[in-house]
Length: 267
Image (tube, rainbow, N blue to C red):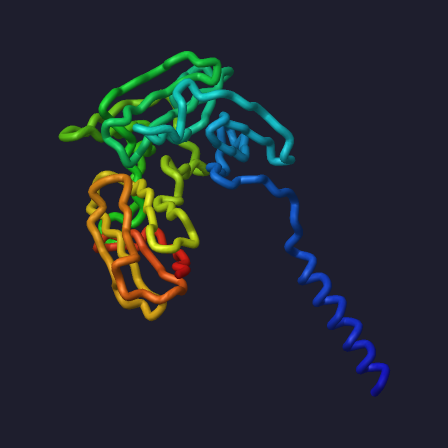
């Protein structure tokens, strides 16, 4: 009996160790205030991409540096907070020996949509337009993004103030490409903690829907809500009978919550 018990414990320990060993840390990237995503630049050539104000770094899957380049337009600077998207060697340009990328702000129809090669050559530009991007539109049933494969070829859809333009592209959109055109951090709060004044820097996921910013106390009671009409919203908590503690917020439409967060009030 003791032998069976000992054998069972050995097998159980071995199984547990094997299960625990299935998830291992491969690499870590410093991504504070940076955009990070995984993409296919063409022909199943997959890369990691990190974008920040200093440039774009592309890494191989073994985490070695593949390419670093400076975007042709300054990104994350007012009045347009641009993002890099659709890095590819065959989508926009039939010359597969070059690498190109799109740059736009999906939440700002005035920002423009541009396609550059990494050497700075401008391949395409459309002012007063952007690539619409939305998760969860129409009750969460669809994803809207500016480039789609269709039975008639790959199409680019650009949204203007009162028009939508459809363009045919040279290549085919990889099924591994699902790049956010805007940072998923749609709302930034500062200072946090706060002693009374809290600032919200808001960059909505798209300009197709009406967004609302709602602030709650720890009991999920609404203490403030406002329709997002601009990029900045400031709330003075000093003139309210609020105690020190943690407060919550969310950015939502009628169909979907896009972001939740919290801040701390200290008095």
